[in-house]
Image 1 (cartoon, rainbow, N blue to C red):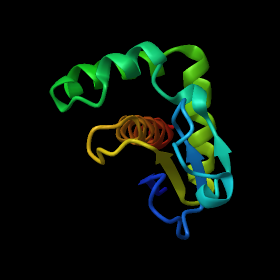
Image 2: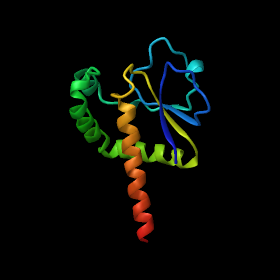
Image 3: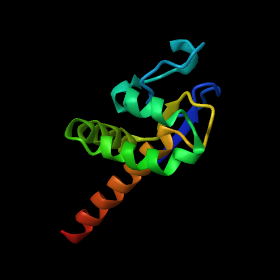
Image 4: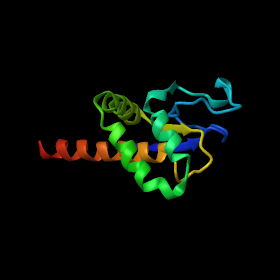
Length: 127
């Protein structure tokens, strides 16, 4: 299983299933430029959390904690399962608009998906 992340302002390559994971459409980008398979804006951080974070690296640790809490909600867990299914079929690329490549929601999402996949694999091996 391969899950990559990519800025919306970088040219798409052979990225497999490309999913925009921002609540806000990337400024100045068209659908044709992004070559998305889906836009899962509901998976992006809530407006309140996004505005609080404001991409301030000093808030990164707390942002991750709060965002993981949002992702733990039942409707979000369902969306994460959908993304994992896509990742199992082939390469999955999480597309985001933030300038900061290290401190953004796609990083947290990728880690959450990888943890879920790891837990699923461990349960499968026990059986």
